[in-house]
Amino acid sequence: MKLGRFEHNGKTFYGIVEGEEVYELEGSPFETYRKTDRRHRLVALKALVPCMPSNFYCAGLNYAAHIEWANRRTGGNRKVPEKADIGYRSPNALIAAGESIVIPADAPGPVEFEGELVAVIGKKARNLSEKDALSCVLGYTLGNDVSERSWQKQDRTLWRAKNCDTFKPMGPFIVTGLDPMNLIISINVNGATASEYSTSKMLFSAQHYLSQISKYMTLWPGDVVWLGTDNATEPPLKDGDRVEIVQKDIGVLGNPVVRAK
Amino acid sequence: MKLGRFEHNGKTFYGIVEGEEVYELEGSPFETYRKTDRRHRLVALKALVPCMPSNFYCAGLNYAAHIEWANRRTGGNRKVPEKADIGYRSPNALIAAGESIVIPADAPGPVEFEGELVAVIGKKARNLSEKDALSCVLGYTLGNDVSERSWQKQDRTLWRAKNCDTFKPMGPFIVTGLDPMNLIISINVNGATASEYSTSKMLFSAQHYLSQISKYMTLWPGDVVWLGTDNATEPPLKDGDRVEIVQKDIGVLGNPVVRAK
Image (cartoon, rainbow over all chains, first blue to last red; front, side, top):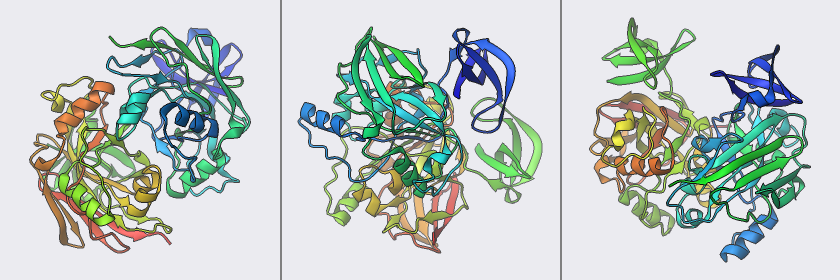
């Protein structure tokens, strides 16, 4: 099942996407809902960020080839993490598919994409075993963990490197029933493939991250866990570009890039 | 004006606290509201976390004496920050005054308080000058940035060191019209004063933090900015303790401490 959140004529609602049509839901997939017979053409709706998380988790350094590349590029010495220490991002930065990534005027750059699989929590959960960890997941979507590399290097935290307004495209839809450890994710910049990787290469699995988080924290419906990116994240994004994160079942998270004046 | 969020007979509402009484609001102080004549005795209500933030900002290392103490204690070498790089916390960890701080069973400790002033955003804002920065603030409350020091040292991020469920007491009320740079904050453990400091000693002012954040991020109504703590943060908290963060206008953020079995 493919779930989205939409706006139409000033009204916001969840819907089930079936081909080129959307059936409006009463309620929400994070509580209870009923599929109605109110039907829209997908192209007639504005797709919104599929959920606004209360808690926004993000795995850093979850693929070996990305770490190796980052070390080569920056002359850095980041090690493969020994534990699944989760990080955070901030909801102010979320935008939907189709909305513009705005590079701040004073960003030294480079600004880069990081295409990621995102687990969307559907049920309140605590103390999940790895075996049961996916039971709390409603489905999966895509995220672009846009990153300003100069600020990432020079600031004490990732605040503006990764959380500027518009730096967290997420969407387009939440798809149920996928195996998070066996998906191919592609990143296209201006129509050319910039990176392609399999989520089977995660250093710590989705199951492991969810189990570990739930040892200490309650996972809430609508929370999201971004699961990291692999490979190099070049070319850098610049004014006029279009960047797409693609997975065949979830769809295309495409966003234009503009530079603020 | 003293604003709170309350629960009574299964209903949640905002209220204005006047002495020992609470006047129920229709609406919320983050949108529009009307003071009603529905009046409650304060002691008859359950006080909730005064707001659930979408974006939860937290200044680390914002007072010199706390940094010096932390370095002496850990043999560390943290420098006074050169810039107001803001950090993040996660709403799952919020609890109200009176609720229990639960130390996880496997926490090596020490677990310590950090009593802080909290700015609560009331209006959507972007690109505020320092001069105008406080115009977006609804009022101020108190926070206890409870911290597990072993995890803070050994993990790659602050996830479980500072974001375990119950590790972020906030409240009891939001008070308008205060000068954030001239307040005395006391921390009591089991009735004895453990720390007392003036917010005039902030390394970066509330105005500076809000202005800097708003250069890159939209501040939203209900967002909170925790402004750091001064001094040593001892004695460590243990099962059976009661910890209070106190400021005379805002009130007492008091929480019992228990250790999970």
